[in-house]
Image (tube, rainbow over all chains, first blue to last red; front, side):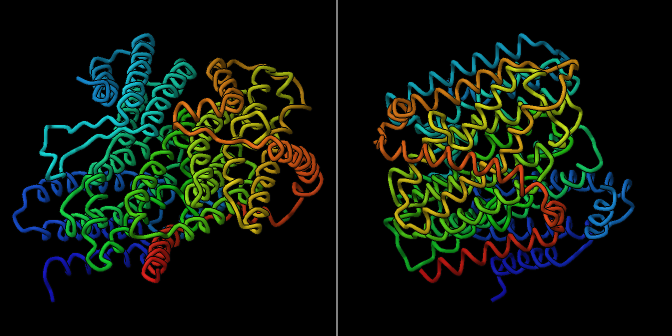
Length: 98
Length: 530
């Protein structure tokens, strides 16, 4: 049945799949945002209109946003120094430097 | 205001005020830290008197059990005391160095408040939020010197931790869905009374995945040495991460195990994970040359050891592990602070290039020896008590042999540190760090060994029965292992060629992320077959 709870769970695993399979750093950050949205969806569907769950999820969303911002900021620094968006190529360049 | 609220909010408020008004005064910081030590002692005596101290922030209804609750038992209060005490030592150790700026002071003070709040937190959502904020802060602390190598480490640390904690948050959501509470104590009551099928398995597995990830156990430990031995973290940050921050995960692990144990008993799996973690951490430490990396992998190995003791189904081993958590904080902080001084004097992180410490600074050399004796479990030092008690709880003889192998590997990789003491010439260089905090910790290593039964009796109300014959037998085994390990290290192990490949082994991000999922599947399949 396609209700908000199940959609949340499916989205969680879609995000996890993306994190495991995708080698692009930006896509990894997007997938983590998907995971966070999935949990938010799952949480607020527990009790419809429950103020506790909703207020907690607002906190969680704020933290998720700051995490995304910080990850993107670090990503820009890494991109400027290594010139690649791929985790694997970056690892190879790091090994060559040492 | 009670002392708990003071401990949480004083460092944060004073840190923000000092940053806002651009004040950088050593005496304000030291006075703040000493007042916190006093508050922590007050809190400890309160806990000693009443058993537990419980405080609901914001006056939420306790029956509903969804508000922010702080709950301090004996273990948490001793951890809070250690936090206040270690941060005082950190301030004394490293106030005048070039690494310190206003920003670092702010971050360190906020982290201190967060860590104390984490030790006291008793509701799952609050634990999640505080762990996320501390992850953000620690990411910026481990990239502090803006070395490009460490940007990669920082990004991996941040993203991997967020994925691990997502599992935890989904577990919290499941708990709220099934039981409608966040408070751990209340949850414990509800789990025992409302057993409806096996619906508690899924939240348990999700929460445990998050916490075991934070502990850095066997399949998912590869982020931990990178963060704890980062190239651009100030020394005190590395010492804080390995000495204190890891204890938070242990406290939460113990709380969760306590409430879920009546319905679900996965302790055998945790013992196996602990053995694998201890062995692999020690083995990786053996292959490293980098002084901070050796210590970081040694943390992994000790985590495995503590995890074994916590899950052995034996009271002796349980209290031994609790004592070993405290001992580990002391000697690991000591060794990291010593490593910081060494890196500063010799201007290298390669342990082969550090020689002749006893001529350079005899006090430092002696303190380092005390730390090494502590961590390897030498008789009369604090590490020996925890290891002895954990070893006593083991009944299976195969386990016993594995336990001795773990201890033996610890001695072998710490032989690298013993090699730095002699040989080489005296080296003089300006030192921004103070040695006194290191000496204090070295003395504590010794006192923690000598006065262990008294300390355990005072703190945990549990007196360990130390069998003198067995202790002497362990002592003889230790001395034999020390000689064999040292000889083996100097003659053989240093020259093995394929260690180079293991040293350079670096898991890509995708593998680390998939290993979290593997851990989750492993726990889930084990718990559903129980």
